Length: 397
Image 1 (cartoon, rainbow, N blue to C red):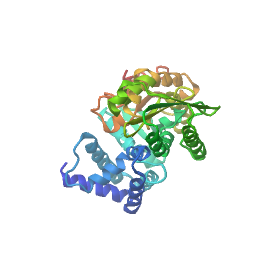
Image 2 (cartoon, rainbow, N blue to C red; image 1 turned 60 degrees about the horizontal axis):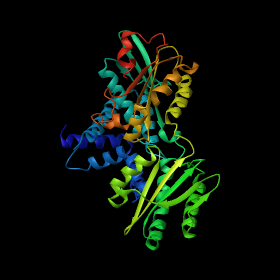
Image 3 (tube, rainbow, N blue to C red; image 1 turned 60 degrees about the vertical axis):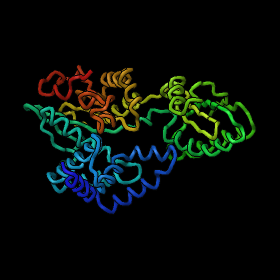
Image 4 (cartoon, rainbow, N blue to C red; image 1 turned 90 degrees about the vertical axis):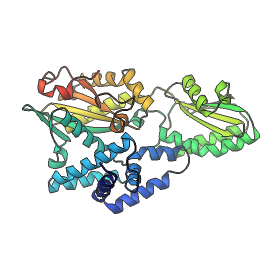
């Protein structure tokens, strides 16, 4: 696709979403992308919107595979809009409107479009039953006379974390200037270890807990105390002994990750020759796979009709490539899915597939699933061995 054609696609997509709503949303996102951890996290969360906005005004065009995929998915949305009935177009615009307000993103729509393309490539005829007919499921797949219902569902990894990354980013931004000022009068290398038995949430009503933790950290440092603990938080300040503390932040973060494990939340503040590291953990292990399992148990009875085999396509959002690799390699997702398949709620589910942003925009990335998703077949479902459904349901591991 030429550069001018790419720009035309993106301009038409913005028009489909609503030019005024798009301008307001992009302005809101850019306003929130202030320097700091929370701003960078917001920019990452809204990668699709920011990429579209940048590319539609760019003379260079898409430069990497992820950008080309964004343009392709936008083109898919336009083609779908042209095929839908009037009612279907209304529902599509409702999805776009929801994506451009509050905490919404374009992820759901683009993942739905990607799933449709993926299933067509596997030999299925695909109809958007959710949009066209208002069905509880999203896609109707058919092949060789056999039909299956597919549900597209987003599950945020935050639902399984005791300490939300969003809350952690806001805490780090709050305390950063205080740490820099403290380092100016206390030069050296320090490590503040925090255990948060009750967690730290990025939810409405949780700002008080965030402010309280910030206040405790600054009070502890101001009083030159080395420890502070109660039922809500255990704080301990020690010298930072890692050799990488003198070798730059990249080496330091690598050693910290090795020291504290993949679930730890880490941040580094520097001032002059001083270095202050914060490392936080919840009181228990993250339960991201368990959050996926709970969501599947809820949506399977609600969104599948039970008259056809059902496929749950779960998109695990708000996870990074290392966490996604860990969920797969340690069989945490597989264990949760297999356990779900033994439940009564799974009786109409012939397979579950899982994907993340790695698959959505990084099909060639090292941590993306080879076939575009990870599939788990339910061997107890009567349709599990049907040859017609095999490309969509056969386990990929």
